[in-house]
Image (tube, rainbow, N blue to C red; front, side, top):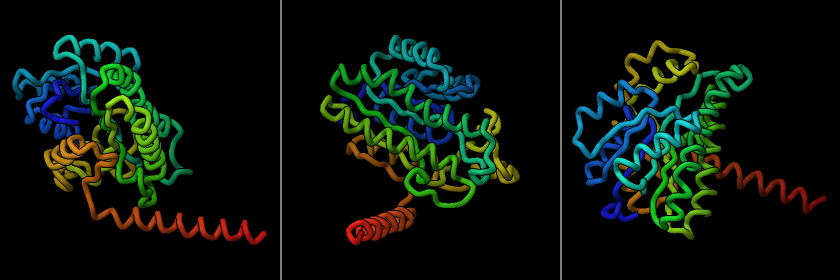
Length: 267
């Protein structure tokens, strides 16, 4: 999408971490930004520190009615949304899949996957009818490769976000709407603390105090996203060092395909 033509961006989970980094990066390009977040106090704080072309709205991405209200409020103030950033989410719990509480899994699905769907459902048809816009759905590098034990439920949900985004990109392309899926690695944020606050589980919370001191900065991640939108990239990756894990997975798929196809011919 031509960033110069973008007028209004709506960013969920925008009051901190990656979301705020994206919001600031878009605002630097002269785009009016609505920051949406479940933490209304945090929203008010960050908006108060920014110019008048950044505003805030409270939003629980699990609540369909809340989406409709937030969308109407945002567009009444800044006009039609033509960049949607579905970024709100919670993190992995550190437990193996068989040890993951059902309630924690349901929460992951409700926020990290259904929250994305609700955003697409709310704004997607409006963009399609307008014949312009761009949608970015935040998944994770673990949506492309499971990576390590203790992240299975999270990886499953983020993989679903990748698949949803890939399908949506195909569907929206004929209507002039771009779709990207953001697959970040470690970015400095308060993700673990937010996960606990919203009822999720973090297996080892001793590191939370220092969790915001490691990884890529939100500003760097936001710059990656803006470049991805400008180039209409299907995938936005922040950490190239993970490419080896993705390539290893693809090699395993190719090897298994060859073995299974060969076995089928032999029979």
